[in-house]
Amino acid sequence: MKIYTKTGDKGTTGLVGGTRLPKHNLRIDCYGTIDELNSYLGLIRDQEISKDHKTTLLEIQNQLFVIGSLLATDPELLKDETKRKRLGISFLNPEAITFLETEIDAMNCELPPMTHFILPGGHPTVSFCHIARCICRRAERTISKLSVEQPTQPEVLIYLNRLSDFIFVMARKLSKELKVEEIKWIPNKPS
Image (cartoon, rainbow, N blue to C red; front, side, top):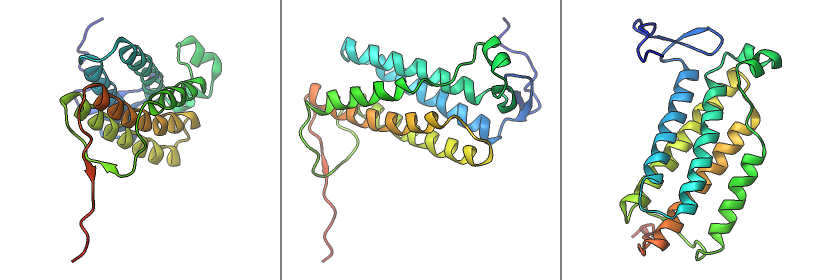
């Protein structure tokens, strides 16, 4: 398989199914943002973190590829189950959401209760988590906008909502494991 095809040289890209769209199309922005998020999760996975965290992140990265493939497929093609299965495109399994909720609950049990907002930072690995969380929220916003025009699988938005929560809790958990102080945001009181 050749890396460059030259088919996108005029500012368009192809969806699975053959439909061509401008590269600035909202659908392309959506799966591009998922790809960006996936890359940041790979960066976190490459840090000095526990094997369990790495395994969990790898599972999430695989789910993001499912989401990316759904977004990169012509929506009309997704309606045809036979064609979709022939191309190997699957919908996001609702169990992926349960997996995130279970992971969040397990990490939260080991953390002190939150009493304030927490300022991002403290350690590069924790900061990478906060960047990934922000990208995840952006992905959620863009896909939410897309779903108004072109319905998407409802579980995708639910998954991204949980994933941003998961990444936030993981940042807190890594702060604890790395012995990094969480800096609470204390709003300035009016004088």
